[in-house]
Length: 214
Image 1 (tube, rainbow, N blue to C red):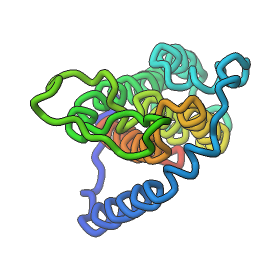
Image 2: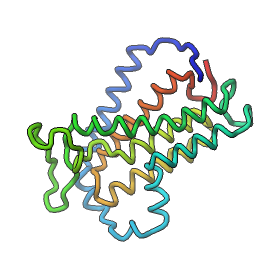
Image 3: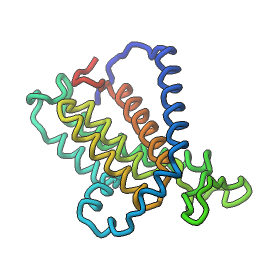
């Protein structure tokens, strides 16, 4: 496994990233209700494109993707260099898996329930009600967090195709809002946490964005 050294994370970078993510989440909260009203697509669940995009939030898909990356030949054009395909495949599989696991305790912390079409207000579950159950909680979206962690990992491994991975993750997030299972801000938070999860794991394993390793 890749265990190369990295320069310390600058505190300024951490603060700026946190501020940008918090601001983005605030903006998404402002548009949650109009977006929820606009995206009332109950028919979409029956469409093949919907199934394709939603499955991006399915952890076993990323395990298969990681296996595929692990079987690639080293130093192909556009592929991450100076790192073994096996280690990169493990990274691609682990990032969304860890993100999916992290999403559950995050839901317990934020405790915001899924949207209710009959009452477009945020509802927060009290700590003395189903304290350790994530059923009905929506912040962040688990599917979207898995999808964005996987997309971030693939962007770091094969950056030339980064736009493809990001669009697929966005599509997964879109289906969660279109299904009325999540607020748009649930998906934004999932994207932010998914990115951070994959990026931190990349640093631990020695993978950096841009196709290089330290």
